[in-house]
Amino acid sequence: MTWTCRHCSETIEDQFDSCWKCGANSDGFPESDFSPETAPLPEFSKSVQAVVLTTAPSLEGYQIIETLDIVSSECVYGMNLFRDMFVWARDIVGGRSESSQKVLRDARKICLMELRREAESLGANAVIAVALDYSEISGNGKSMLLLVASGTAVLVSPKAAG
Image 1 (tube, helix red, strand yellow):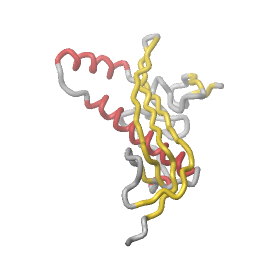
Image 2 (spheres, one colour):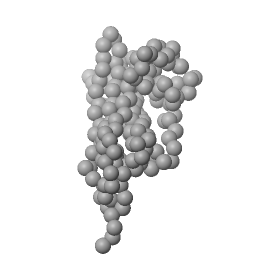
Image 3 (tube, helix red, strand yellow):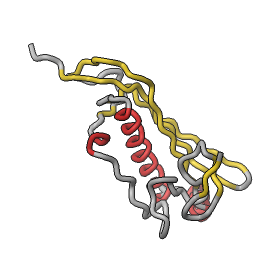
């Protein structure tokens, strides 16, 4: 199965939530004036935002009532050709690439919020042992960033004082 990007009309395989070419999300970004640097982050409900994430195997001050399931979210972003050229130049002369850092930061924020959404849909109020895995996918002159966030969705409650 495939879907068509509403921004650039690129055909995308169904397993990807974002367009490899322009980075547009299949259901979260506006159809016009899209740019990975200026696009707003998708809106998430307050209950999704309330899901606590931690890289630790437990949540201090809370007890795990129920372990629900492993959850994950994946984000794939196209790396703009001009951005790639500037990164190449930065690689030679040194320095930081602010545009690439912003793409990485936004990818992390979106991926973690989608991880929260996945956990909340299971009835969880926390995700423990969160891990982030960044990879580059390239071929046919195209370069994409893949970010996978995963963890264990749990239901926690505050530990009784005493």
